[in-house]
Image 1 (cartoon, each protein chain N blue to C red):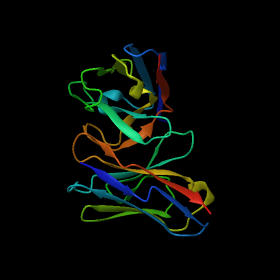
Image 2 (cartoon, each protein chain N blue to C red):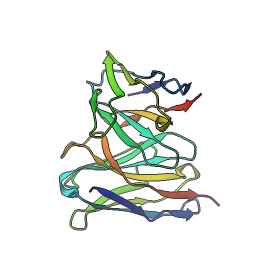
Image 3 (cartoon, rainbow over the protein chains, first blue to last red):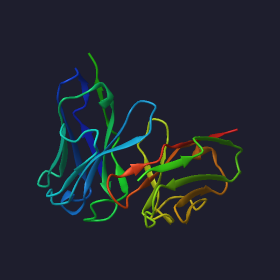
Image 4 (cartoon, each protein chain N blue to C red):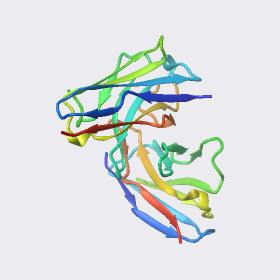
Length: 122
Length: 106
């Protein structure tokens, strides 16, 4: 059974940093691209970042490029999102999600974690 | 690519047909997915490639396309279908979601 478990969210002041983690089970991250998607309170879904199965390619939404870094450790089957220079508008629940098809960089997302909340406020 | 989803909310009776539409700002080659998100839960993939139903999804859900218009149809609304539905294009980056449609029971 595929499971994704995010952690690392919390309360941080503007300008601060956080690192989110997403531990996967039931499949190998070395076979699938992985993404982070966020949802601000009461709002819709916003794609944040995607990393390829090998970790060699990554892409970011314009809103986070230069501030967030996605990475993965295939040996630990864990995905990360390093977030820096956080702003109030980064406040959201952050979901990790698995690509539906192996080794397809841009794909729909067939499994999602329950998300981890991030609140940026002074 | 912009994804314009309509309506933003819809209220219908149990057993009614519900239709939700997403219009893409350019051709997306059927790379269109539909998700269901119930309150307090993560999104769930219902349909990919415009019309392919995910395993385990009830057959009352279906997807279709006409040009750059993509449609999610619930043929007979059930109480457990109360949720917000999102479309997503994945033809090219950045991945883009529609604004969502909140479906409620009258």
